[in-house]
Amino acid sequence: MERTAFIVELEKRISEKRRFIQVVAGARQIGKTTIITQLLEKHSYNHIYETADAINGSLQSWLEQIWSTARLKIKMGAAEILLIIDEVQKITNWSEIVKKMWDEDTRNKLNIKVILSGSSRLLIEKGLTESLQGRFELIHIPHWSFSEMQEAFGFSLDEYIFFGGYPGSAELVKDERRWKHYLRDSIIETSISKDILMLTTITKPALLRQLFDLGAAYSSQILPFNKMLGSLTDAGNTVTLSHYLNLLHQSRLLGGLQKYSGSEQHSRASSPKLQVYNNALFSATINKSFEDAKSNPDMWGRFVESCVGTHLINNADICGYKLSYWRDGNDEVDFVISRDEEVCAIEVKSGSRLQNKGMQIFKQKYPAAKLYVVSYQEFSQNSGCILLEDFLKISPDNLF
Image (cartoon, rainbow, N blue to C red; front, top):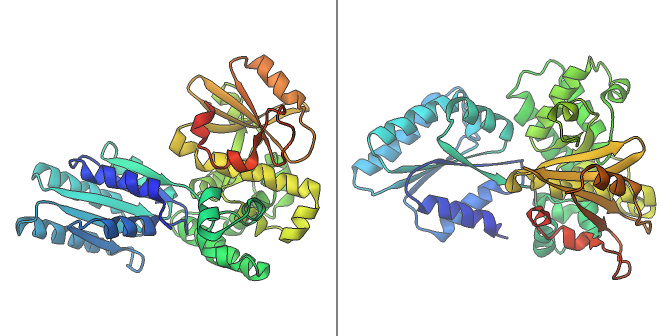
């Protein structure tokens, strides 16, 4: 299946005159390489495609050699060359080399257009902001949506709520034990070991893994750092946990949402609401089967809320909003999205109760806010709810 919107966006940018390096960034196993491959299949670009996946990271000369080949093709008469380097973050000091070669091409007016992609947004963004400022554009590739999983694999809403959006695991859902092993071994452990531990100095790798397991199991719940400290072995202090949670967030595994207050300072001081980027990460971490989860209303309510959270957190970069939650004493709003002066409060309902005092109080504090209720179940036409199945198929951009 084609992720058409991202192919079209990349196609559009490549067709423009040489201006920026295009960076395709996202989590593991969501189809970044496939998007590029499908782009090449649709067009007869004069291109060079290489991957650093199996390259010794210390071989910086490999990157320069590929670039020299592209330059040679220009000298031999090619009007332009599309140079594509996959998993670029695996090359040591890749950003300095790319900056050097790109700037040389600019000075010499060589029409070499560049696409970089990598599974670790953590390192890609670090390299981009350190060396390539002003020279690149990011194309954020999110986890697969409900519509995509439904179209490609026939997922029902309930299957998407539990099994999430990893296309590589879709054929395994009938064998849940095998499915969970695949998620833990091929996606979770690979992402943590290769995208974080190999690329960042981590003094307590076991703690990082524990934090992910705890956070994924508590997806859609607020968990103060002090409680995390009591649940983790050799946890150290809240500064360490906050740093590790940020690394998991940058790798698009697990986010820690902050409380909305209209004040950045107060938001940063709040307890995080934990949110996986893909509900498969939640399901793979807990000892519950699909049927067990569905038969437990409280547990299924958490899955439903977390599913709404995955839709919002995956679209935050694309739509340019900040995702938060809100709480004042016992009054709470599940999610808040804010962009500039616009604010939307979103409450998630998996049962029959529709009234929420928290939404009313939030509206009193922030009168300009728009309020939405997302419901797993269908009620009367006058309920004013958005059905979850419909909500997952729209861009959150439309809520503003």
